[in-house]
Image (cartoon, rainbow, N blue to C red):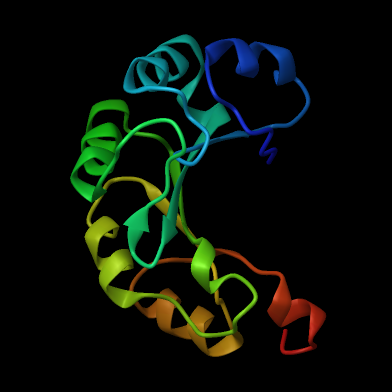
Length: 144
């Protein structure tokens, strides 16, 4: 899985073949039109949509997005996997924001949760059907 800071469909062309899956993140995407282009020009299983959040709000440098916009993207393009990454929790071991995960868990897509993930968090998330995680700090400090 590669996060190359994709902003548009040309960026994908430059990294195709570098990884099995390419992350397309709300933080760096240029526009809603580019999201459509990216998902129409590439196999769904080769893309992972990353919903980047800060304090529960969608993070995007180039466009104004909210949770409803992101749900629309998910419903329209049906990505195989969606990362829910709360950037404000990365490195904190503070667990996940249950309200944020609840917003997305009813979709048909496989969720991957990151930001504040701990051993206890993993057990909680598995109970609600999430079984993929982005983990860093918990590994580095020996909790996992």
